[in-house]
Image (cartoon, rainbow, N blue to C red; front, side):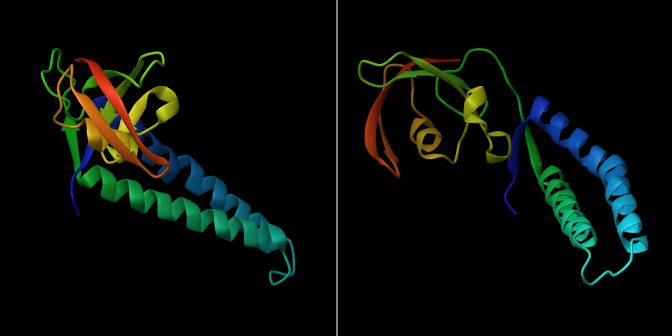
Amino acid sequence: MPPSFLTRQGYQKLQEELEYLRTVKRQEVADRLHEAMEGGELIEDAEYEAAKNEQAFVEGRIQELEILLANARIIEETGKRDVVQVAARVTIQEDDTEPEEYIIVGPAEANPREGKISNESPLGRALMDHRAGDRVRVDAPGGSFYVRILKVE
């Protein structure tokens, strides 16, 4: 499996989620299952079925996080940069719109609402290895567009 790029903050956040799932959430689900099993007919018990589904989700997420963290590569958020790389803070502008600022992160940390875009997203991929002043074509599912890189930090 290829490495997953994470900031120190992102790595810590995922570790905390994993610890919560292993300790608190697993026990909550086990308690729900136990209560549902004592409730009577298991075949028709919706609560039992819901608890089993939640257990499967929790165990799947635990496994996903374990693999992700085992293959994690911590990216350093160092000051000034010349080119866009993972962990870079990039200010871009599309035509006559307001400038937008993003931090390039790995897919596991991507959250566009927080200004964190994946290096594997169409925009992130297009920006990689470019410099301030470059005009970059972004090939997105909704069509192509151009952005100008105003600043790279």
